[in-house]
Each structure stands twice: as C-alpha cells, then as structure tokens.
Amino acid sequence: MSITILKGNIVSAPALGRLEVTKNGYLVAEEGRITGVFPALPERYAGAPVEDYGDGLILQSLADLHLHAPQYPMLGMGMDLPLLEWLNTYTFPTEARFADPDYAREIYRRLSRELIEGGTTRVCVFSSLHREGTLILMEELEKAGVTGYVGKVNMDRNAIPALQEGTEEAKRETLRWLEECRDFRYVKPILTPRFTPSCTDELMDFLGKLAAERDLPIQSHLSENTGEIQWVRELHPDCRQYWETYAKFGLWNSRTLMAHCVWSDGRERAAMGDAGVTVVHCADSNQNICSGTAPVRVMLNEGLKVALGSDIAGGDHLSMFDVTAAAIRASKARRIQDRWETDFLTVAEGWYLASSAGSAFFGQEPGFAPGSMLHALALDDSLLPQPHPMTVEERLERCVYRRQKDAIRAVWSEGRKVFTAR
Ligand code: GUN
Ligand code: FE
Image (cartoon, rainbow, N blue to C red; front, side):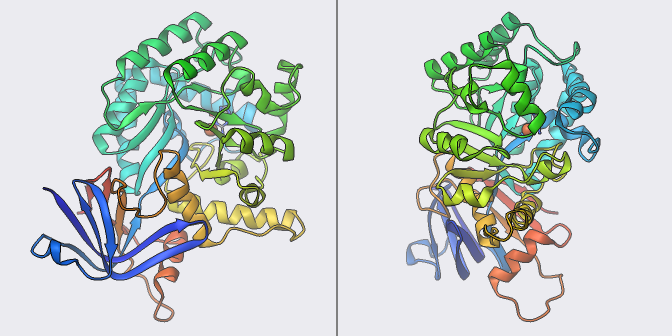
C-alpha cells in the first residue's frame, strides 16, 4: 500500500473563519486518501517514510473556480477598457489564435505548469470555442496534475468573425467534444455558454437540455458590468433580471457556477440561494476593468455558496494567494463603500474561500477531512525576516500577502505528488 506522510506545521480551514493548526504534526494519506492529521505519528505508521518539511507550512492546495485559459498570453494587458470593449478589442482576437493547435499546446502547457507550481490543483476553466484546442487544454492540465472542469466555450452571436460559431456548429462541436473527452481521468467537461449576450436562445436551450440529460455542471458569467446588464435586458425583455435568462433555459441549479455577480441585488441573490448556485468572486478582474465591488460579505451572511476565481486575464494574478489578498482588499473597499456597515473578510475567511469553499464544488468536505483525496502544498517562509516570533496564523497571513521566492516546495493533487521544487 502507498502511504504519504507529511510532517510540518499543518494548517487547514475546516469552516469559514476558522483555521485548524497542528504544529509539528503529521498529515497522512493512504493510497492518496487522507486518513488524518495527527500531533504524533500513530503507531501503525511506524517505519513508513516521512517527508519532513521541518518548520515549514503544510497547507490545503487552492481551487481557482473561474479563469480563461486562452487569455493567459494577454495577462497584464489591456486593462484600460470596460468589459464589452475589452472583450472586442483584446480578448476575442487573443482567443481566436487558439484555432492553431501548436500555439494552444505551447500556451496551455505553460499555464498548466504555472498553476501547479503556484499550488492550484483544482480549476473550473473556460477554454476558447475551439474543440481541438479544448482537448489540448484538458491534456495539458491532466499531464501537469491539475484536476477539475474544463469548458469548450459556446458563443454563436455578438462576437467577431474570427471567433464565432454558427448555432448548428456550436451544437455539433459540443457533442463531439463531449465524446472525445470521455477518457480523461482528472479533468471533466463543464457546459459553458460564454454569457447571455454570446448565445442565441436556441443554443441556450440546447445546452440546458444537454446539462439535464447528461448531468453536466454549468459555468458562465452573471451581472458583472452595468453595460452588460443593460444589454441583457434588451436581449431578453421577458426576463426581469439577468439570472432569469439562464434559469429559463435550465442553466440554473446547484451545479452552476456564476462568475462575478457584482451587481446582483437581493432578489437575484435569493435566486442563487434557492437554486444552490455558486458565486465565483473575481476581485482582481472586477477592479481592473472597473466592473464594481461585489458584496461578498453580504452574500456569505445570506448563506450563499461563494468561491474565488483569478479570472485571468481580466484578473492580473494567477496565484490564488494573490487572489485571496485581492478578495480581502475588495471586501474592505466594499466596507468603505457601504459606509462601514458591512464587515470585511478576515484572512482566515479569505483562505477558506480559496481552499475549502472551492473544493466544495467538487463534492469535498472542508479542511483536511479524512476520506478526501490529498490536495496539499508544502511552503517555506524561513528566509523572510520576522518582526517577532510569529504564530502559524501570522505566517499564513504573510504568505497570502507576500511570499519568499520559490516558497512552494511541493504540491500534491488527487493524492499524487505533482510538483517538487528544485
Ligand atoms: N464576460 C463574457 N466573457 C468574459 C470574459 O472573457 N471575461 C470576463 N471578465 N467577463 C466576460
Ligand atoms: Fe470571466
């Protein structure tokens, strides 16, 4: 039997706002599945090899529940435009290049490595509309050790000639892609209407029925930008609110992810709560393209499911440590905007959203729960100066905001060690 035993300062997020710390403890997995976190190594493991990370931190690895893989080459560019112009000017032409399989292979290989080296082992990712490119993305993620869901994007209206599919073509390519990606083990398909303005009613209807027939999850964008919301209102005069344009086609349920939700009001949020939709908060992106500041604290208080996304390349950081810091900062901006009537996210809360809340979409229990597959990282912060002898919680906080170079020493995904730093 294969046994993994990691020794170090073990930190996990078993509940929103609560960190569980085991100093100089042992995290044990058998056949890749966690058996427990122990302050001393249980007798039954005596003699088994221990990977000792000394005074280092052993953390849950992270989940990025919203990113655009074909926007990786434009990371850090084109931020001076609002959403709809940004899409037409920068994003669509960038994604159009993924018609070329060699280009897709090169970019997706680099992205997949950077995800793993940054400790992100679970993703829900948008590809481009290209079927072949999407299969290449799935191959590269799987090769690197990233697990999760990948979506071939559907968009049959309101784009540019180089990046738009016909309605029949979109249906046909989606069905073919679903056939062709059946044998992946760690990455699975997720249906992906880009957003309401990109999809005809006929395509939305097709995707909703497909989701139900094949029990597939769904990801899209919701209420990100005021111009976008106005446009959706014009496109669907029969719907009172944006979310109803998804709900009326069967794209609104407990396996649906909706990115942004910056402008979702009480009624739209109640509809998310009722259906069990997960909000993916993308703080960097919301600020970069001036979409707004999502009321994440209110969403959490209302009991909504909330996770985090880098939303590259609207977001300019791929590391989920940076994304966590951005979410915390955004919650403080929102607190000021709300005239100090709403609370901000604490570090422990931000960390929970980036780790446990993200993994919940994959049916995982929070923290290092016995029975879960091992998703973890080992991190070294020993070279940073200490203002005083720091607690483990303080060290985690500093890692969120600032990490020493090459801090992440090793990463485990779905029970396998997928990265070792040189
Ligand atoms: N809405 C539709 N497409 C996109 C996209 O690529 N990025 C963002 N941030 N919003 C979108
Ligand atoms: Fe997005």
